[in-house]
Image (tube, rainbow, N blue to C red; front, top):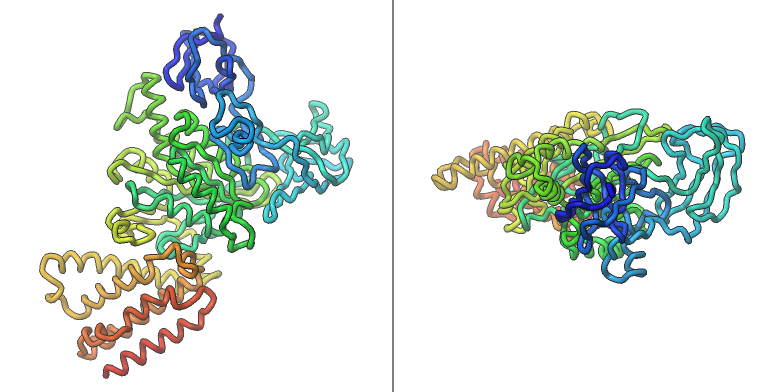
Length: 581
């Protein structure tokens, strides 16, 4: 038979020549109906990658066609849940099958027995275009789920039910379309590798506020933007993504654990369930979706998990939400591509990765953006991807190709991590290309001084780096007092501003207004000390006081609402320096 398995090589299954399947079609493999995808068709053979373990498959087993692309079910019930790489609910699987996923487990993503209170927002005779909202559900305490007409569907409302409790599979609205009646239910199906359509891609001119000073002030990301977090083992990639998920001002978080350790996903699930969301006062899981494809899960499913998370994010973006994706880590995804490519006997490129690695990375990050949706609402998908280069070698292919397609690069430094400097973002290697795009927002919404202060801070850090090299060779005693001051202020910036305590209630997340006032105080200390030196006084006189330490401690001493307290810091600086005279 032409639909029987001829070769099994890990997650790669080969059939003979057949015209039964189409490219990228979802298929069911073997007696357990494992989920697979057609990735190659020729007149000699058809190749399928299987998203589940192929243990137990044998030559001669049948492969069944579905006629559909690899797709996921989108609807109410996703929020606050944890899924595997193909959007199967892990809690429901645990209740049914125990701690391990059974081969061919076919539990739907959404609970068909659960009822939702639907508020109908259309009347009979109304014309509905693609993307338009026909009902609203309060999915969690903080997220309203908008039921939308699927892309490609339009028509006049022929029948409509009253507001009330309904199940996922209930027909709420019937449309009279050119192709006949179309029933609108509480869910829709969408292929994971096909971007959801939009009306317009907008400029990225609003920052994603993270509460992390080194990011918000020095290397910001825009809503709808892309960022990479490269770093070796133990540099804090996962911890930083946890912080961004907890404190960023995105409406919804989609956290993708791609090839990571299972205990890290457990930590996310437990922490986010207990953590009170500072924006809403409710649990953080009320606006979070977890996609878990841990390192012991089938390797091919890592690719699916990335696209699954993207599709879910785009679905909520279409409702008008700002969604942030945390992908941890894209290196594990690239390693899965490399393994499957090797099993397909493709010609390897640099370090064994397939030659199409750059195009796959670009397709992933290109689905980010600020959009005008089909229903004229505005929403965004921001993508923050962790990269795990072996040996912290940023010249390896995944890091370098990621660098080509992202506009914010937050390079983690092992030496900073060993010094317990969090976030361990190296300010000499990192950059953000969003500064120009966001400049009008900073000037009009925050304060025109902000960008000038940022430029001065970066200039001092760059000068301090050069002076430290000289001091390490010749000793700091050879430096004049103004250069010694640069080194001291650099220390204040590093320890008092860039270093942040994730476990301190005040310092874990800092609003932009406080970040601005902190920079202002640091630069005020610098300018006042420089005037003191220019009058012929020795810097050592100031260093003997507690002035520099007082400024460093302001991140703990001043809470996030007491902006007036920074004026007292300036007064303290003036009084301390005047007392030396």
